[in-house]
Length: 555
Image (cartoon, rainbow, N blue to C red; front, side, top):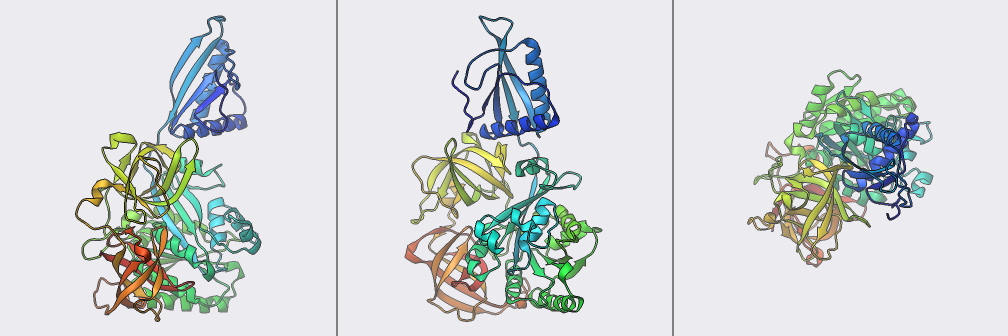
């Protein structure tokens, strides 16, 4: 037999396995999970063979102990079982056996997902809060908690986040918090969870506005979590801007006041008074609630998701105060509680929910190239359901390229929350291994959609569109160029026309969200993109936000 491949593949050679200590079994279970992931939920253990491929065989007693050990390994993983055992005796040694043990795993549990984008000014403690939530550890007052989330050396040295970082907290069927304090890996968190909250950490400094704008519209957030430092004593201009964005995009909002251990009472009181005034000005239609206990978390979560209430949590990362109340609300929050948290709109521009029966649509957030798999795209499934291979009965296309063209593509495997799955459904994240019929330059910001979407008579691919926006920069003029963020991509566009509007419509966001206008834009160089009514859009001019709103028409 050929030697075992250590770097990839779903086949594992084992001479024999003996029951051992819990640590040994846990190590073997982790190895099994890796092989299952490599085989898209299918692993093959070849027993009685050395790693170099030499067939040696084992006795019947050793074989039974090996199978018992494999069963112990499967019991440590979710939805894993031994599917079949093909046992044979060696021709030259009839008392020795070899076997192929086939082990399978299927993602049969329906998990709900929630995406929370964490915003705030620099120094507000965003990364520290997420470090405490995802790792279950208190901060030491010098930034220890945030080190687990920082990705680059210069971020560790400066303490300033310059990239988008994802953190995960899960909740099991009983509501127990699952993080790295009681799990070895993100995969184990996902496997044990019934409700998963993904945090998107953003940048606070204006020089990284491009990254923050991409996080706001590119990761399909269901909640904005706005962090403010209790020891600052004032509400910054950046915080006012984020409140306006939450009002315009009509996204549920929660406020997390950090560094309570460093706050001085007069300073904190002044800041809270200003904060409540800022909320009244930006979002007068929503109530305010300072959360001090875990009681009524069900109703509070539903009120928050229905845009009725903005909960305010006071926390201290050093003293681990306020996090139990925060996780209690997140455990009960579901984006299905309110349709306007989902992307999409009807003919009047009002946001409506998509269904699993709708045409399939995946917004690509990241692109990977894996030697043994090929091209893999990850992102959020906005609508529809897709299965692996031709059994889905759907013809998928990927695009658009700069010319607005799409290419045929086939899905060869699916992972949902890093777990092999037979399908990807609306309102969930997914990773698709795709195979194109010809070489395709895939980039983030593209979409994978049903081919029928392009022939149903609704224009979705264009270089020009109309948006209804709240103007954040009074210097915005016609024929100005701005950088427009749509999904996970951004493009240079020219403002062709601006029409100022009144805000008498009762369904509009509150007047505190700024002056309203209808703008018509065209991407430079005739570059086309996939657009639809209701899509959120943010524009900036360098390190300054220009406007925020929704697409209303594709020209």
